[in-house]
Length: 80
Image (tube, rainbow, N blue to C red; front, side, top):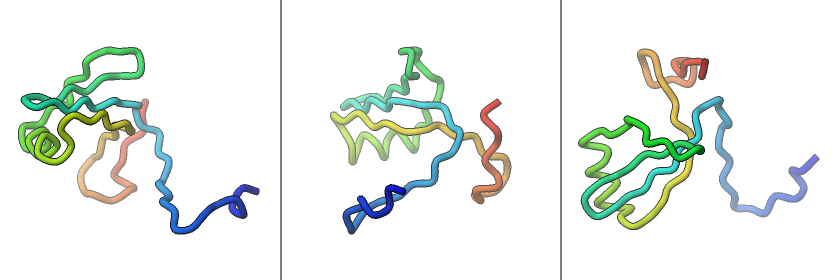
């Protein structure tokens, strides 16, 4: 229905049932915030360091997913 409206090149991402999260990347810290404004306990030293080195001053938006075991799509757990 909408594929004829796509302009190439384009990016498509798999929609999964994750939790919405804003990632505020500062100079010295990274803060993960829910849609309702709650601070989320998602900090990871290595990931935060990488974000601060390449996305400082930005707000990233996306979905937080929980995996069980391996890195396959099938390992992503149900949001409930």
